Length: 489
Image 1 (cartoon, helix red, strand yellow):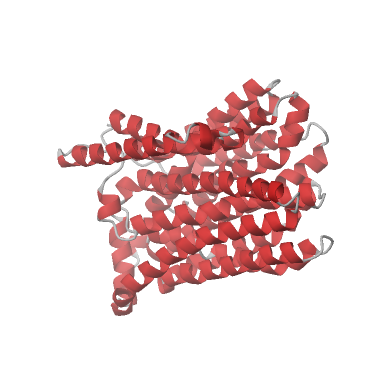
Image 2 (image 1 turned 45 degrees about the vertical axis):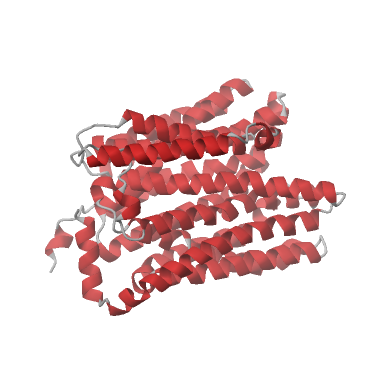
């Protein structure tokens, strides 16, 4: 009975923490920079549209890289790709911090986004490779906590660095990655397993080009939204959809001919839970990613909070998310999709109540009154992101784990791009229509994010009802056996 466990890497948990630290840095850099944009604009004497590329360019490069980097890790070795990408991320962080002008800063951030997008799919793939059975659920629980908490605490960490470092504090938002990244790089060389690559090294260049073009077409109008991109290049949305359709047909053709597609068509059609989980994640991140910018705008511009105080105001959500995600990793094997259903109900209730309180409560005690509701929302979020990652990837064969993890996170990044463009845009539209009523603007914007989560809840409930008879019949030994078997594919 102990032989399968004896075959596992004895350093697997320490190796996991190395990958989680690196993943935390890359995801934190999506949100941490947002609170520093005014300081960057003043320090570099540039326009708001130019400095916005520091955030949006990173997110764009991140999303474009994920699937291809995951496939490269599957083919050439995840350890090799992880360490090379982490070294590049550290160098780009140093270059961003030292940038004398906006052009070099944006260039460094684009390169940093490519490095971050190369690290991310290796994290989930290494979990697939290193862990089996119930341990895999706990590992994904920690990974899910990293995803959720890194996004939620970005404004807090960014505000704290700006408060401590002074006028040029925005540079330290990038410099702080250097010592942490170097330590993770050193430990990664020592602890990450050396495993033979799982593929023949074929990268499907046509698939890479089609997928990259499709994602770029879908994301570019969102990235340019603040400068009118949604009206000027709206035609990229249908063009991107057509390119992605061509990508899907090309991948099926490669698979039929016995080749190695960039993304296995069977992931969506034959792998239990993958398509549902990817769709749920994309819908959830529309609301989840967008509300943080809305809260920052409300607390800083509407109530006059400092960046640090604005970040602290949403800390209850981060705390709840961290606690719940760690616990949810242990419950997902027993409760399955029902856990995400409960989590979605809780996060919708928490954020919906927060929206009402910020709309109706006086400005002075607004943050204090909203704290319990934000804590409830964080607890719910921890039961969504972590279990959904586990259930989406648990039946994926290890040989495809990198590409599968990259595709899952691409959906999250696309959903996040929609939310980050739409919710702050709605916030500004409401301000203009109501003569700067910040309370109504935050309520309407956060409420719209909750509506996106309602769509995710519909997907989760449908999946729970579909699988409930099968889950009721399944006994614990069979469950453990099926996961062990899936992990060995």
